[in-house]
Length: 224
Image (cartoon, rainbow, N blue to C red; front, side, top):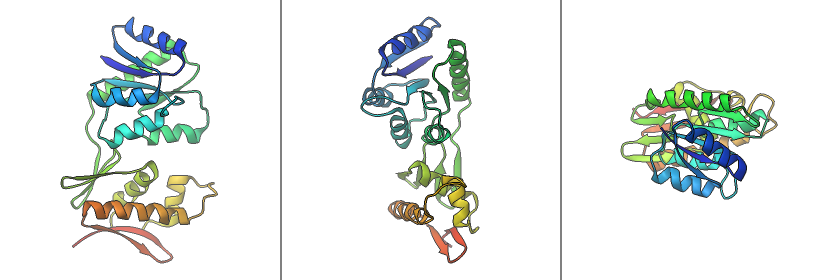
């Protein structure tokens, strides 16, 4: 098994490399997000172990870019962050798991083994409405030979609409699903994200429409 490890703390990076190499993993180790992205795009890995807080690009942005480019390699985040919203951000970017610092070697190895087992049974997770496909693994909309990458929140909105085609999804439900029940974000932010999604659907020439129903919500309709 071949791993890419990205960690900006030189002592921890050296320790992680030793832990995995002593257990017969092949390891490439880098200390910043820019190098992590370059390695992950050009080399074949069985798994990624990424620190979130890194110079250049943080781990979340590295993984978001990889997923948008179709790289589906399983990824585990190492993070000193404890806030739930920040963990969710990493998972929404396409991570398989996260491990808070400090951690034990036994738990780290167990989580990496679990991550690699999931890779062995990986199949793309797709949602379809007519000719439009939402790839849940890469956060992409696909129509014919065209692709458009979605942000984390655009993905969550589109996923909700595509799970319920022709069903009106209330704006409040989208707000709760994407931003949380207790969010103080104004509901107009939903319209902004819907507008961005519509532009991407137009670029795809996808035969679907997101229609606003006054005082009700949004619905995804396939062209007849």
